[in-house]
Amino acid sequence: MMTAAQPRCRKSSHDVIPMNPFIRMILKSIGTCGILLGVLCFIVPLTSAEFYRYKDRDGRMVLVDDISKIPPEYLDQIRTYKEREDSLPEDQKAIFMERRRQAEDSRRQQAIEEEQARVEQRQRKARQTDIVIDGNKVLVPVTLGYDGLEAEAMLVLDTGASIIALHREVADRLEIKDAKKAKFQVVGGSTIETDVVQLEYVKVGPNVKSDLHAGIIDHEGVAVSYNGLLGMNFLRGLEYSIDFDKQVIKWYQ
Image (cartoon, rainbow, N blue to C red; front, side):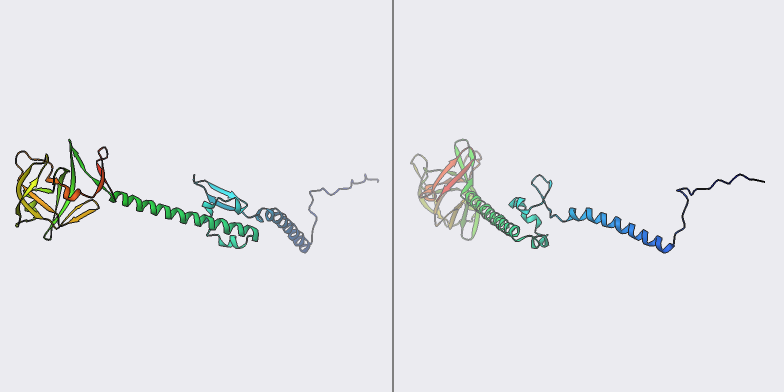
């Protein structure tokens, strides 16, 4: 009895073909190496370039590929990357060193100028004395020295007075005991007889004068905001100007 021929079965592409485990391991290794080589080929060009980073005055981070593009004032930000400097080509390294030198010179000069400005400001302030304008009176803070004691007083600047005049309460603070009688010229040219003493020193701002005479007067009437007069025996020979708006005396030497 004849039977129909059995159809041949073809291998599907999904059928698994048995493979030697050793060959399979080799093929797997080759595939992995190929992938790694491809990744490395992609990475190397990206990492071969040199980049420099600094923060600008607005706080933004800036990246450049050439150190000569970095402004001199920001070169100190990359000092910690010394290995980067050592690996530079000679021409770029020369540019880097020159610009660093210029930046350091600039900072040094700026520091010198700032210190000079501070010194000038201190000197200018020392040549000024704060005063009080009370109506048409100029009240000046004065330091008085006598026999080891010191007292502060506010005296009216008076170019009409021949010598310093102190209210009795200031003399008491200085414990003045050996005053002598003498005549004292006051505003308007008139003279009065009063006690006179020789002070050890008188200081106003940067000015100090020694062995000046001062008259001691008894103030009568309502209380006032000053303790006497700053007369010509101190003011003579001094150059000054009064700034009424700022309420200062500017002394000139």
